[in-house]
Image (spheres, rainbow, N blue to C red):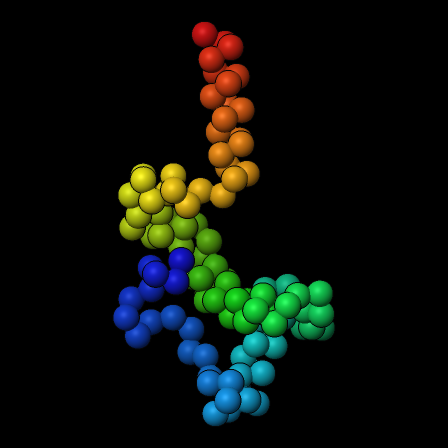
Amino acid sequence: YKASIPKNGGPQIPDELEDPKAFKLKMETAIQATLKSEKAKGETYSQDEKELMIWYNYHFLGRGKPTTHIQVLSSVNNEQIKKNLPPVFKEIFARISSKLKHQS
């Protein structure tokens, strides 16, 4: 999804070392938006997962899930999708294919 962002696009993330307060505020705001609660702290998430919530907020809460999915899927070819498909989807498609074969 990050690859679909135009050059110089994406969320404006303060540098953690140069401005730790602004970075912390950005991350806290993203956590609250992602978890849909002003009280959310994201205590069960790793630091990396919390930082990804900034991107989740940008991709899906700021622009809309369908729009983002359509944009990303239209920018990759079928081979790229097949190569990077999560295992759970491969299992689902295998089951569907198997059921369709038994119906014919």
